[in-house]
Structure formats: C-alpha cells, structure tokens
Image 1 (cartoon, helix red, strand yellow):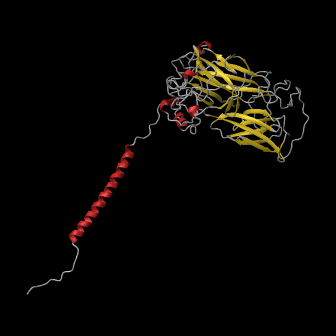
Image 2 (cartoon, rainbow, N blue to C red):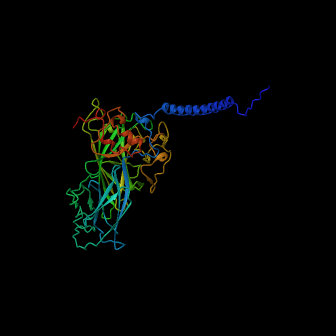
Image 3 (tube, rainbow, N blue to C red):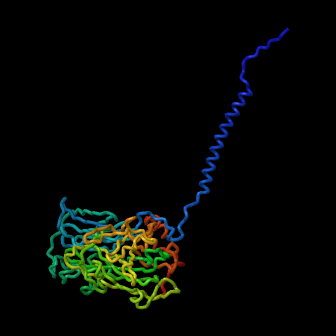
Length: 474
C-alpha cells in the first residue's frame, strides 16, 4: 500500500543560509572598506609631514600684514569737562603723559580745554597715564584708546601766577621762565608724588628723554637691498634717544637726537640720513621745509631731511664693526644733531625716519620695513632681485600715509613679506655675531615674527649668549 507523506512547505534552509552569508559578506566588504578607508586616512595623517620649523630667517612664514615693528604708535586726545560742558578752566597749564612705569612720555599745554598727544611705546605696553599738574589728578588710559574725557568735579581756583617772559605759561610750570619762545624741555621724571619737573640745564642745552627711562629706540639693518643678506641684522645698529622743546602754543621748537652707532658689520660703504615728518599717531605727513639742522648737514633734495655722514668708515674715529671677537672693536661713536623748527610750522608731534644710502650711489637706499622712499631714492631698484615693493610713490607736501605701510603697499619688503630692517624699543641689546642668523642669536624672534608680533613681544631681551657679541670695549 502506498504511503503518502504529509509534507508542509518550508523554505530551503540551505538557500536561506546562503542568503544570510551573502548579506554578511556584503556587510563585511562594506565594513572592510570603511576600515581600509579609516586606515588610509590615519596613514595619510601619519605620513603627512609636520610643518617645517623655520631654522633660518629666510624660512620664516609671517602674516601678510606684519610690519616688523615692536612699537605701538597711537594718538590720544584728552578733553576736560565740567557740568557737561567743555571747560577752559585748566588752560595754559601742563598736562603730562606717562607710561605704565610712571616715566614721562610727553608734556603739552592745555588749550581750549584739550590736548592732542601722539606716542610711541613698546608693543608689550598696556596702559598710559595722564597727570594734571594744576590739580594733581591722574587717570589711566588703555593703549589704543583714542579719546579720554575728564569730568572735573569742581573747578580749580583761579590764581594770579608770575609769568616772567609773558608767554602765557606761569613760571611755576615753565621750564624756560625767561624765554618767551620755549616752555617745556622734557627730562627724566621723579616719582608720581612730585611731577613738577624743572629743567636745570642752560638754555638751549638738549635733553634726551625718549624712549623713557633706560630704554633706547633701535633700528637694526641689513644693507644688501634689493638683495637679501645673511640676516644677522648687524650691518648697522642704531641706538637712539630723542628729546624736544615746545613753543607756548604746543608747536615744536627743537628736536634733539643722540644716535649711537652700536655696530657696523656691513662691508658696503654707506651714509646715513634722517627725514622729519609731522605725526598724528601712526599717520605721517610730508611738510614744507621748516627745519634748520645743527650738527648735521641739510639734505637739499629731501624736505626736512638731513645727512649725518656720507661714509661711515671715514666718519668713525676708529673704524669698527663690533660684531665679533675677531673683527674690529672699539667704543662706538655717537651722532648728536638737532632740528630747529620755525614758528608757525604747525608741527606739534613728529617722527624721524632714517635711511641708509650707498656712498658711491646715494640713490641706492634702504629703510626700515614699510617706510616709503625719500625724494632722492632711485625707484628703478624697487621690485628687482628679492625686493617686492611698489614702484611708485607720491611724497608731495601735504601727503599723509600710515606708518609702517603694510602688505603689498609696503616698501622694502620681499615677496615673503620679509624686511631689511627691524625696529623696537629696548634696554641693553646685544647684536648677533657676524654671519649668525638672528634666529640663533635670539631664539624668541621666530615666535614673534611668525605670530605677526603678538607673541614674544620682548624677544630682544632674551639672547642666546653663545651667538651674540658681548662688547669688549666696556
């Protein structure tokens, strides 16, 4: 008898298993691909070279707007108010501007309730201070603050004070009480409790007070422009102090300069000149010729310009380099010169900008980064060899510019935005040894440059003593 089996439909388990295996295989392939992709990315990260740390100046990667200046330039207008109105109650009395170490930066007369200062301070500075001599009031001001309004709680008593020279400034405030043309000559201030400064020098004797205290204004040069040099930045090192005195209306009467040629490691015969500009903060303006120079020769082709020497080696008492133990060393020579400014010049604040020129080719000049060319510069040198400067400039009277110029508008720059000269304010600066890259001599320089000046702002205070020249003449 035939036997019939009762069989229910059931999917083929082998087929099901096959499908499952196929799905697992696909998932495995996807997962594997992801793993390979991740591994590849990780490998790329591992294999990706780290950014190369600059070991020489020419390798420095700096921001396009970096100006190679460790100095902040600013303008500050101070106004005096009482009962909501501008007041002239403090007119014809002095107002002092001090740095955060209570060192005097400038002194001007309050006129029509206002004073307009311009200042230069190290980039590491954070505060300024004003001091009202007539009342003893002090107030702090942040660097970069352009305006300060001082609200007086009461008006000072009007006093009848002796004014021997009838210049409008009482003798008690006048550094030259018998000279109707001068009122202030700035000198090192005493403590905050005694800021009534008097000049004990004979009339007309220069007083050098800027930069404040024991600091100096430094400019350190390479002289091979428009070709790059070895960046030891010791071809010419200028260490300067400046002072000035004013007419009673705040216009400048004299500008005094004492510049020590600390080092002269270059092999090219060079001369040195300076150009004087009207200044309002970082804005500089070309003025008509209003200067008479003493101690230096006028530059007949540069308005308000002067030539200190035409040949450095002939000017030096004993030719020296002061850049290595093997080279010539001697106590450095000092330039002393001054500018007399005519009454009515309109110049209350100023800036002196230097330029080097080749003795045998005076049009071949070099300046600090972002300084425009002088009227005598040979413009055909610009944008040649390693230079990437503009090739045109308008230096006509009345023209203003922001100093230092930046980016593609800057003169004396390379395509990589590198300079031929750097400026800063410091105390005892030691120059790099001859043929020694400044990055070796000053290890913090790289961080300062590559951060665009926001880091290591006092790089010049931290030399590597194995790579700087320690003077033997002291």
